[in-house]
Amino acid sequence: PRSAIDATVDLLQGDTTRQAAGELVVGMLRREDLPPILAAAIEQRGLQADHARSLLRDVRSGGGNPVLEAAIRKAGKLDDAAWKLTPEFSARVLSLASRDGSPSRGEYVYRRAGLQCINCHAIGTAGGLVGPNLISVGGSSQPDYILESLIDPSAKLKEGYTTVTILTIDSEVINGIVIGKTDDTIRLRLADGKEQEIAIEDIELQKPGRSLMPAGALDELTERELVDLVAFLSALGRSPEFTVSTEPLVRSFQTLNYTDEANRRLNRTSIDTAASEDPAMTWRDITARVDGTLPVEPLDRFQQHRETPPTSFAKFTIALPRPGVAGIELPSEGIEAWVDGKPMPARSLKSAPLSKGLHHI
Image 1 (tube, rainbow, N blue to C red):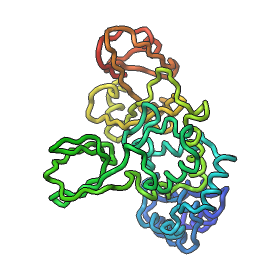
Image 2: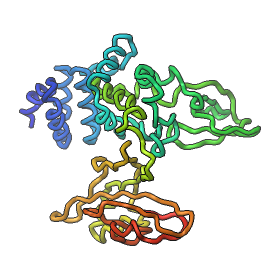
Image 3: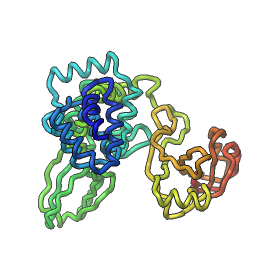
Image 4: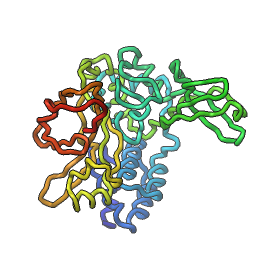
């Protein structure tokens, strides 16, 4: 591996070889002695900014290494490579987005966990409430406005999403969107989606704030990824294939997090444990794509035994206003289902009678 470092750095310079080189770098993270040597080689040779962004993302997703990450940022001059909204930059990105931008690839960028887009912005009924709903942003906004909102989020804040910055008498600084106010309190929605109530008498200073989307949030994207993201947002509500349908589809799910403890519990018991209230089972939110399908790629995988195929878990809830048949349709092949913790054949969900109230599938 030490002998491969120079060749790996060579591959990192090429447009067609940098992805494979990134995989080699991630493999080297497992060796304690290699990252410092690799960091020195990368820093000496330098990297194009786009190549450095891509490699930095690979390293972070592979577990991270502070020394190597610092070297990549320095080699790519990423601290000086923030996207700047110049007329030339805007014209180039918008031209590329309209000519050969890929909304499909852009949706993948939008859903990337590190960007937090879906956690703040809903598309229809799925997603966060911190920022405006983007269900029809492509039909109501021009591409240049979309690009400006991505690069300079505070330039034009949408009505109802203007923020305030509050300094309390305890010297705590709180930024958020006002969602309620009385004579005695003010309620804010914070950047993480949580709500906080502040007593008026505890406020030392209050002034208009900036967007809760931080400036530079997209600096880690390559230009191609930014182009595709603009293409995706421009297609939302404008192109039929990127318009949220009115079909009654489940769009908000949770998926089971892979942890050593969860994996041990599933191996020692059965996969039924995933549908129980076992504290070892922890879940994270995930949403369906615009077309209503649940992406498999972001789901963590469990494998009970060497000969069994990997298994992923997702769950959702439905509320019945009265007893009856919910009519839940799932593909039956390769899928096992549980209703309120009890196993049920997936094909039976369409006709199974359920009681009034909330049910966990």
